[in-house]
Image 1 (spheres, rainbow, N blue to C red):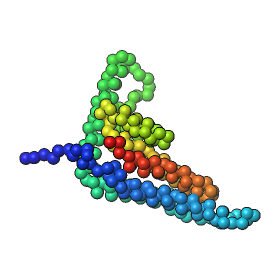
Image 2 (cartoon, helix red, strand yellow):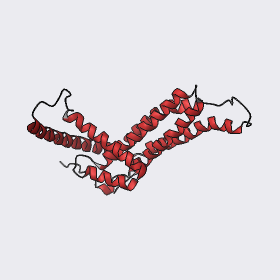
Image 3 (cartoon, rainbow, N blue to C red):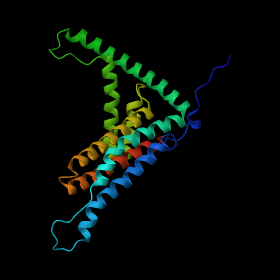
Image 4 (cartoon, rainbow, N blue to C red):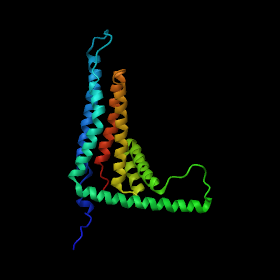
Amino acid sequence: MTTASNPSPSLLPARRRRHARLIAALTTLIGACAEAAGEVYGPIAAAPPDQEGVEVQTLSCIRVAMSAPLLLDLAWSEDDARWPEMVVREDAASRRTYAARCALAEAHDAVHLTVSGPGRGPVPPPTAESGAWMELVSAGDEVAACWRDDPPQAAALVRELTAGGELEVDEVLDAAVDTMVVCGLLALAEARTKATADPSAAAELCLAAVPYLARAVALASADLD
């Protein structure tokens, strides 16, 4: 009986292909955010300077805020369906790195107990399992924040975070994508709540979501090799 071997990194799809549907959905949302803001700002710009109470449209602000999570969820699912072998590989890598982070956390906890004893205050420390998940989320947040100001430095940070084997490059980049997507969706959710009472604020929030969505595209497309 033969067993399937892991594909060579050179044979793996580029990240922009692996996440093609997500990237397309994000770019669609960026355009929709600009269009929604334009429906607020356009009528104001076209109105005579002395006109009070310009009528604007906020339906697009509400529509993009409501549709964005569903659109992105669908895109993620479509990308997974297009690359089932990659999903299997990523799941296996995730289990391996998660186990490695748990083992490291347990080792650190054992050392801490030996040094300081069992009495560590009224708030219990996180379990090794929760700490392992928190470490991945924290790595994604850190890379996403660094990418905003200095992508080459962020790439170097990814290498540093993955040097020990407890995290994989794609795992960290995907966590950073999640961070940026969540920030963009939060801005759109706030735009929806303000659409009726304060159309200008809603338009500004639609535009505020754009940099986050654009950075999510960059991170989803980034190949460090």
